[in-house]
Length: 314
Image (cartoon, rainbow, N blue to C red; front, side, top):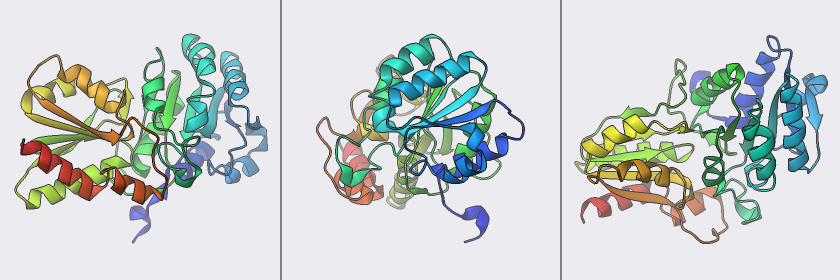
């Protein structure tokens, strides 16, 4: 594997991008919650101790302090496990950051089922539902190193508050080095006519692989990347709802109020397409490795393929 094709964690890409940005942005600062190791920020914090504020296990304080710094013209990036940042500190996110439109970038690390064996206190399967309901807060979930780099190049220039959910695993590459990120725009990464698979984050690669497997059985599945969860590309979803008879959403999130619900709200306006939402059921998730859990809930390649074929047969 050459270096261009090398799989990287989201953390590694973000840390490198922020490190490079310090040369042009004197106001960039990182806020951590006893999470610099989990966030892959140790090289950054060692190189830029003057750009680092360690708040300890105090997400509420971290968000409020970051909002205050943003109010004074700084550009803070808050790193904390998504399970705590989007739960424990959500009032501060809502009021101090979003309501006051303070330029704080909230990075929910180890999102979804990344913490696996640590159980439901550390699983983050509700964060998209919570954050996308907050006015004036953008929500993103990138899928690979190229999209992450492009997304953060946008965030570095944007003055809008945003929440970004990332996981822990090394990401399979979906895009290429020339990828350009546009907020509020979904992207068709594979054309198809029989069914449309809509996904985001780490499950997007599995959706893409499932589409390739379905093609072997004569089923042409389109695959759409919904990395920009808010703002949402309602125009594209409207077009998909009118073009396809069958739509399937796939996400590492509770089936309640994730991207499936966001898509459903748009699809319902047209009363044409049937929609199936694949995700975690409305119950405490099982424990296991991430691959084991994805397989159990049918969110891996084989599970998605099986669900799609069953859906189309009805």
